[in-house]
Length: 160
Image (cartoon, rainbow, N blue to C red; front, side, top):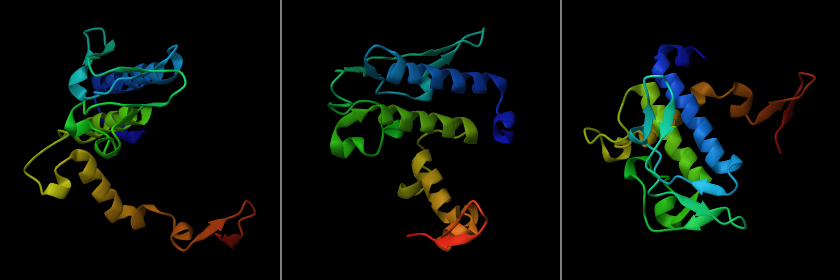
């Protein structure tokens, strides 16, 4: 919650309403709709703080009997699900990944792609992933690191 307090009100509204719009496309609409090009420049906020998700040119309507769709490369590379180039499958998870990049942009104030960094850290998503991997040992509970888990009674057991 503290992180959200550091983001200006306009961006919080943009973030939350965009998440609602994607949730509608993925689950509430009569058929699954995959946006295919979720990025910050496709999310607008008007003077009344109403969010509009735009640019549905890459969007796909997925038949009810499927949960993914094979398609030619679409979307913006900086926001593209890393599995997509190999699988050529768009899923609702592709949109969620792209939305995660938008979230990272809002939280860090950085662009999704920046060439001033090494190849491994060129995208904001890869930079974040590398940072998390480096700090994972600081984040994980000691019990998890040792392969033990706490039971409800407070005793420990070894994970199998």
